[in-house]
Each structure stands twice: as C-alpha cells, then as structure tokens.
Length: 339
Ligand SMILES: *[C@@H]1O[C@H](CO)[C@@H](O)[C@H](O)[C@H]1NC(C)=O
Image (cartoon, rainbow, N blue to C red; front, side, top):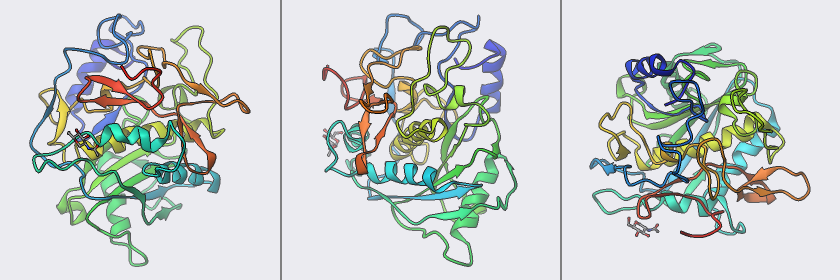
C-alpha cells in the first residue's frame, strides 16, 4: 500500500478511483508507516509470487507498430527533450549493445490478445507538439490532460496525426501541477473519450517531479527521508528529474501497450484500479530487487551513475522491470541469471 496516511490514505485512493492507471510512489509504507518490503511478505524478491493473478480480459493490445507522439507541456530545455527522445528512439533499436532498452521491451512483447497478435516490437518516435505557454494553465486536472491531447490533435497548425498505432505522451515540466501528482501518482495512462477528443486514443501523462517531489517520483535518484541510510543513485543522464521520468515513461508505455483500453492485461477485479504489468514490479531494477532495494544495477565507469539498460547514442537509462507472464517473475535484460 502506498503512502503517508496508512489505511485512511488507501481508502482515499480507492474512493478517488482514478479513471486511469498509474505509477505510484515507491517505496511503499505499510499502515504503521514502516517500509513495506514487498508484496506483503518480506521473503519475496523480484515480485516472484504465486499469488499474482494477472489475467487477460479479452481486449486488444497495441499490436500494430506503435508511434509515440510527445506533447511537451510547459518549459522544456532542449537537453531534457533530447534525453527523453533518445529513450523513445531506443525502444526498438536492435543495434544497441545488450542489455538494451529494446531487450527490455521484449518482455512487453510477450503479451498477446485474442487475435494472438503480440505487442508490437516496433516503437517509433512520432511527431511532437509543444505547448510552452501552458494554454490550459499550470495546474491540470486529470481530464485537462485529455484536453491537452485534443488541443494537439486538433491544432490549426501542424496538428499531431491521428494514426493507427499512434499514442500520445503528455510530458509536463517542473512548474506544472497535475491532480494527485506526488501524493498518489507520478504518471498514468488511459484512453481519450470521443466526446472530449473526437477519438479513442491511448495516452499517458508523466510529470517532471524535480521541483516538487523527486524523492517520490524520481526514486532512486532521490530518496525519501523515511528510508534510512540510503544514498541516492547518480542519474545516468545527469538529471534526476528527467532520468526519473524515463522509468515512469517506460512503466506507462509497457502498461499502455498491454492494456491500452483498460480491458486487456491486469490483475485485480477492478478495471478502474487495476494492477498492471509494470505495477507488479515497481521499485525493481535488477536481480534481488524488492522493497527498498533496487536490485543489482550497473555502474557507469566514468560518471559513477547507475543504470540498467543501454540506449541509442551511447546513452544509458535506469528503467524498472516488468512482469514476465510465463515465468511469473519481474524480468529485465540486466538480470544476472535468467531464472
Ligand atoms: C509472442 O507471444 C508469444 C506467446 O504469448 C510468445 O511465446 C512469443 O515469444 C511472442 N513473440 C515475440 C516476438 O515476442
């Protein structure tokens, strides 16, 4: 259970029933405020569990080639955009040395739908839209995020395309407040309503937490005070806020691909509060990970930063693992053994 108010907080979380699925703060605390060391039992690592009942609910996965259209909302320095673009370009680049971002995506490709199609191996960076002046204001509700997507696909000049494999990634800069940001969510994904946007389009939102709550949303590049004796990891691209966003973006893309309309792959009985393939592995980045331990990471010899996957242009990233449906384990390409 996430969060600072224990049971009350959890009730609020359930009552708020976000119409979206979200990356939640990590590491979690239990009702007494202590760090919860995993999925309710201290001996479990890497999410391994016989109790996880991830189920398929008959809806589609993103089986056609995926094109990610970023929408930069707020002030985005060029170097921050470059880091995020490089990550998106890495998702299906097979030339990058292992362990690569594309290797990481291979676990997501294991998910299929009733047409027996797998999640697409192809993820491309599409067209981009910028709203530096924050036309919807600096404080956004969840529904406002759909309006930001609408603005981008209906813009009079160079609207974002509405294409078969298109998904929309709303990225908010440090000055933007989004409903429940930091307290409950660091990002979420859902799909747009035709009544708002004119189409049903999968989209995700991820915010830059650098100014507000890096210890919540840019973990482990910042560490909450309730985790004793831990030093933050050094971010591989030198920017805790953006390096932290990369893992949340990875999380949301994995879940969007396997559960784009909230009716495909998730655990738990409530589709408005599902546990999806990345939720099962939050906080796990390497072998042995669980609770407040990230698992074994790789260290960049020159900068001393921590990472677990290689990307295009010699870049490195730290992304959380995702659930492997066959091994019933959290899995990532930097695993020391392949179980
Ligand atoms: C597609 O999914 C099947 C079964 O879900 C899996 O065995 C296979 O390896 C997947 N193919 C790719 C290319 O990932």
